[in-house]
Image 1 (cartoon, rainbow, N blue to C red):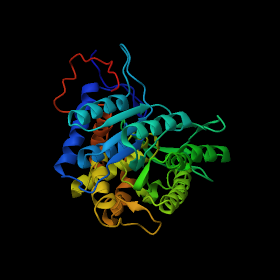
Image 2 (image 1 turned 45 degrees about the horizontal axis):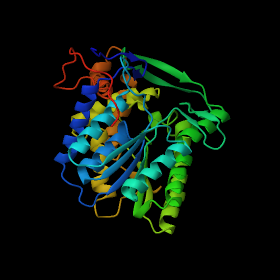
Image 3 (image 1 turned 120 degrees about the horizontal axis):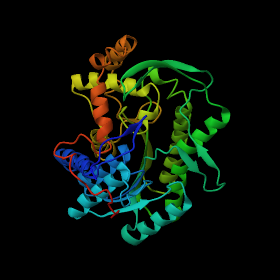
Image 4 (image 1 turned 180 degrees about the horizontal axis):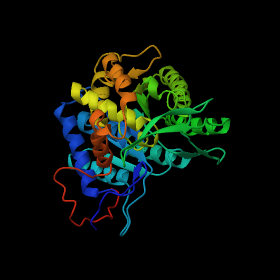
Length: 395
């Protein structure tokens, strides 16, 4: 099968196995180039491990610290004459490369919100590792079936309290337009918090604690985003932002539990705005990212997921020194994004952008390239005209 990118809205519905493997190798090479994280974790559980920050965390732990890793994800498998998702191929490539270097890697494809997957993972930890000393929580799901009630909750990307109007961009067609989004209902807010808040993270930690598989000094980290004022009404002060407030409240409870029981700590890391399947779905945000990329690349401070996670692990989580927290108790690796000169430039450029000058004033070209790279397209050394076998079994 010759595989080409097919983009529908904010998602690419095809993915390239060899391209995904090349993308994984790029990230591995970067982590190795930065040297060993000597004080890094030994046994790592990554919940949401197949794309984005979760995948980058797993790569950083394995190839930066030699960690044994268990990954939990929910991806569509490949079948005969049917492509799997990029996350499916990413995980296969990661596992092949990890095991080739003698690193333990075990995978669980299923609903991370369910009690069943939690039980399976805990059994695997008991069987293979004994305990875990780092738990990364990096789920980004549009829906959740609640394990107690069976209710299906669906998250929404909406403002709260009043309609929100701003500029956005169709990243595929390059058209800049105005958009108005109606506010979320109370039920939609509650559903979004149920999916994207801290309840499931807390359930994971409680389950691991009760099973006795948390190591001495065990740390857990979850990821968040704040962003600039121009996006606050749809993000920080919108339904997602309320879910992140709930995540931070859960972090405080988890941190107290870990410290009371003699483990380590829990923290929320606020990360940089990046092209991801999640961010591509949020109105306004892709336009902001396109401006940000141009500015940060010009300044030499641009980072992708792997650069962010390597810096988080090496300078905050496992530097041998205390992590640096903000006034709300969060670790910040969005610090380069939020520098005053960068944000002042964003504010200056934002009102000037039109469809006609989009490529001049932003890095929309770089945005598109990063978007396609997530699905294995646009990687050097890959013959995209050649036949490739789509059906790849999970290892």
